[in-house]
Image (cartoon, rainbow, N blue to C red; front, side, top):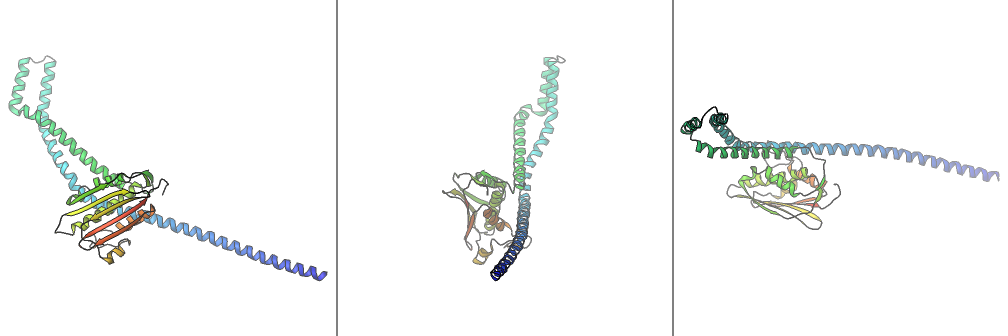
Length: 319
């Protein structure tokens, strides 16, 4: 009996020791897993911040390209606004004289004949009928020029604004239309063919989607510019089926060979000369689409052109 008790106690202590060791091991593993998980979260946050930084860098680089072209676009309305202002300065003394004469007549400080004499003299010196006809055109042209400049600046500010973490249930057509307005001058050398169907709303980041359109269209434009023997043509399609929204951008530019296609989404890869392009354009497009649970595929043939097709799932849930 004593021996049985001894064996039982010995077995119990052995089991307890094994259980204690197991619990200690489990605590150690749990602690190590917790630390590893924290480190992973920190690394993921670092990667996320780096992606945001890269996107902003690409956006700033794109803004530099856009600003260079838009400087010319702003100069056009600015030139005739300046010319109109000079014309208005010339007309101003005549208008002041007319208003002064009218006020004097209302105040009865001059007679009808004196007013008539003043008007005849002003007409002889300035051709009042021409001023009356011209003033409307001057004001209308100046207003049109100011609205054009405001429109250009508004598009630039909208594109540059930091909205990288804002998603909303929206129509991607808004991003396409905004991009076409933004790139109106840059794409001027290419024929643009649009096929836009009514698409459903989906949860997306409109600012990021505009970056996708900007990068795709600028790339297509550069590809077309390299073909000197033909008119550049860019075809844009936006349509949807039951599950996805599709974006297609096709060009008749220089196209890409197989080696280039394999590297097209690699960060910092570019076929442009040193100092031209960041090599981040298509990498950012790829990342944005992945963030929207989407996909992208490219078809291309050297000297024939390229077709880029993007697919974005239709969803009302936050991405």
